[in-house]
Length: 513
Ligand code: XMP
Image (cartoon, rainbow, N blue to C red; front, top):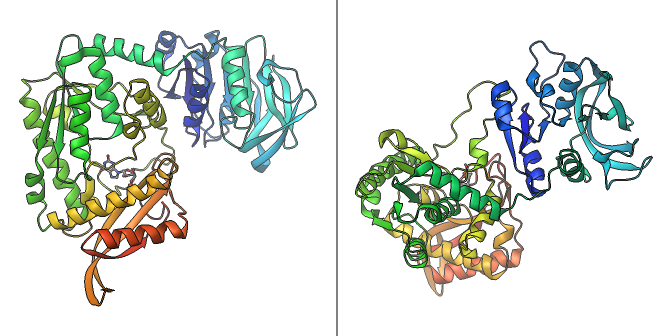
């Protein structure tokens, strides 16, 4: 285990990504959450101090727990992590006249294990800098191992104590040698071998689930998405028929989705599954509702009721399984302080555990999205399932602005299926984070054959993204858009105009409601 102590940098998660790519298991914790006892218990093989937005010169500036210096394990400080290391160990940090941002040339000054595989001594590597303060005087025992024009202490080391620090960010893409530097830290310096694989994770996770659950019953809400599917298959491998899955068909799923989920789990995996067609209940409750937040609240509330009802039919379970991922878990170090604004009330099964007095099983808590996909493959889930685009809990309801009717949902389902079929046919599915159709509550005039038409407008959306937090519209070739529009208008009765959404996020959101 490598422990990453987070000082609030925007890119702390990238450190974890780079380590995992090198086959090293790591955990991110806020810098001030682990006391000496917790640190000793974790028994890390090395520690990384992340960057952060604060200045060590400010009063009350965050600092690393004093206990880490006495653990006898290698420590690597990055940017702010370097500055707090220097200050805490008796060196000096000073404000820099010029704030240094962006590309810099790093000159290697020492044949150091940290630089294994990089340019030779005297050679240069491109690195990414982003800092206001810099080191002015080294603590005792440290020496410079690399420098850049703006940073005479770009990389420093105390080889006796195995403390290292860099002013630049090795975790970002713009430091091409950075992944190697981090790998050198974990492999050459901490002595790890990089044997953390999905197969190892799977075996470990199965053992953990067994230990946690014992012979109790577990229920799992399946949404048809990757996360809950992978969680369910993994838990089933661990505890077999102690697991029951509940799939609620809200009537707002995509074409063929409900059948697919049932077939996969019931027939392919033989996992006990309650498939509840509750579409009438949901659609009746949504009748006449046009406000997006109201729609979300109604669906979220009803989902909990319905799930609770069907879950109780299993004879009472002690555990609820959820496909919570690592990015949802990391307690981010708040720098702005204030509460954030609610843009949308997200629908998930939150609130259920308290109400049903259940404990949680969350076997994906340590994984990033693409790692969940890798685990799904490891578990033999079909590729079509594993590579699926994310689908929101409220389903097509939030892709049908205005009032939702069965007729409109049917039109949307058909058009959406054609759009996705086109994307797959053109081999674009995996380049896109998410693609879907939106049926607008607007009718326009058209002409088909010799007649006048007055039908709905359909909007197409496709975005690229890394985590759904920011996104850019996907630049389809015009031919693709033209061909897709022609197919949709030709094959779907009720649509006579197709438009493409070219809004990024921000200022737009990915979904329309
Ligand atoms: P927005 O529209 O906020 O969406 O830019 C970001 C990502 O989140 C998905 N999304 C949801 N997922 N429950 C979910 O599980 C929800 O209520 C929900 N609303 C949006 C959206 O599809 C995109 O991937």
